[in-house]
Length: 373
Image (tube, rainbow, N blue to C red; front, side, top):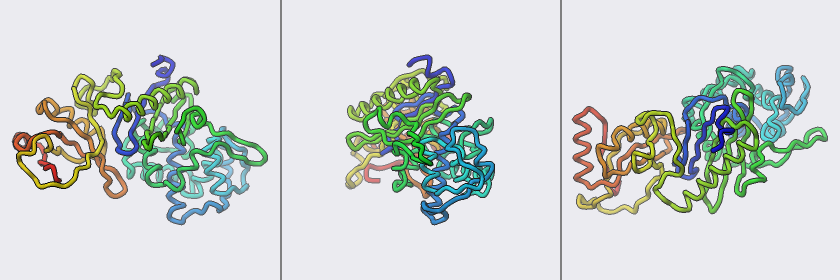
């Protein structure tokens, strides 16, 4: 990887969108400035409002002086002017227009400050526990922070919860007042299968990108923070997407990519030196009678957590207590949020029961999972 990408504070993560499995991560939980990736959350809130009838696509919203006065990027809205919700969405997606974005946020929250509070609250509900929003656009604010993992969580939520509106992110251009604004996401044209999602830049963050791509009925989501140029950021994303699709094609247990990470084992990362990688791929089994002699198909569940890193941390600490076990992080839907089960799999019934007894003696929670559970 080039030093150019890292210069502004590099973070990245790649997910298998079908399972939530982390295929690659580098400083994925380090706080960064999201810049215009923030608009993904504003649009999520707009899609929520469209879904429950608080907004309509052809509804005209009035542009306030505050919205019209936002720094570029902008489409040149004037105070008192009106714009439809659909036009505001398209301006935010393509031009990353701050004036249209703030007008949209004010239409939902009344004021941008109130809307930012609503954004943060909704982000928490989606599992974005390290994200705080202070404005709708992503313009500089020292208290507006997020992480690569949280942005991947948001992209996944947009895909799953707002399928009817996700196609807006693939809009190639938007025409407004006889001007045509091209989508800032160059990967829509550069990379086969990319159909969204958002770019971002402020000086403090560098060039950021969330991309989603689908090939051979498999979808991956990539997040890159901290490019020092559009090209450096885009080239790095292409490398990550290529590696992710190769990983899925190979269906291998080997780590996607080995990079040094400065976090210590036991704090949310299992390093390549710790043998089998954590995988979030859910296993689907045909129900069959439970048999104590069914070797290798029993598991010990160590809990369900609100964050994947918490599940990974537990597995990292206990991995060596069961050398023959395979760690598994399994995402499961729970209401409007996602929980992450931490399991040690590939055990016999005797091994699983013995391990759980030992863990309970240490005052640790666990449960034995049979093959037909």
